Image 1 (cartoon, rainbow, N blue to C red):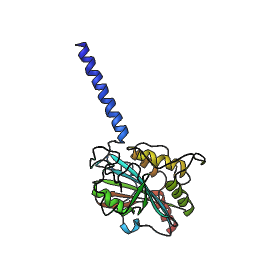
Image 2: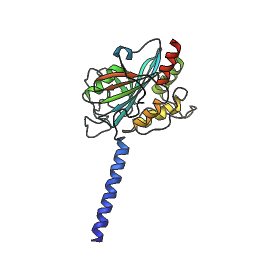
Image 3: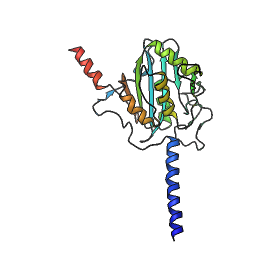
Image 4: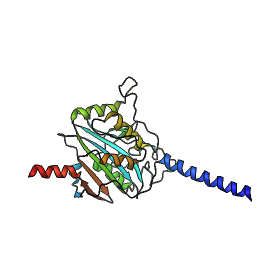
Length: 259
């Protein structure tokens, strides 16, 4: 009897450990979508045209995706007036010819699920080291692709940056860095389940003059930090609806300028 109880306890411990390790490696967590959105921020209808590139303003977008609650993926898009757009999809599935990169099951609810490599959104895109090097998707194209693979919601943190900052980050993303770089060696290849960690570490190391974030494994924990970095706006896609939110302090500042 004692032996059977010991065996059962050991099985329960192994089950708990297995579950914990699985959740950690896959980056899964359980909460409502966009859980970090401040309740004091008001929603405004977002025009899709406002998401297109503006050749007069360089921008950095950090995107956090959710699947019916759990945060599932993080991607980054950078636009330079000189160099154009570049898209980093660490361990993701956009324009990934392997179909279910990083996931042996290819489940449509997983971050790496690729519905079809012939999807019009990514037909001519070329992926190299998790970077989309040709025909980087626009925000609208990427959201359409996320809709097709049943992404429930997405938070897009938008930061207006200088062209000098954009060119510097663009070159780092495209070419990586060597050990001789002041910040050390860097490359954009990422293991499955480490999308949030990869982008958080990149921002911490190379974009600290724009965004100050610490390492974060789960995507929603990165979102928590980004909300505190005074983004110019946060675009939220949820069940086909598109809204944008502006930090309350920016709204108050604009109001004061109008007085």
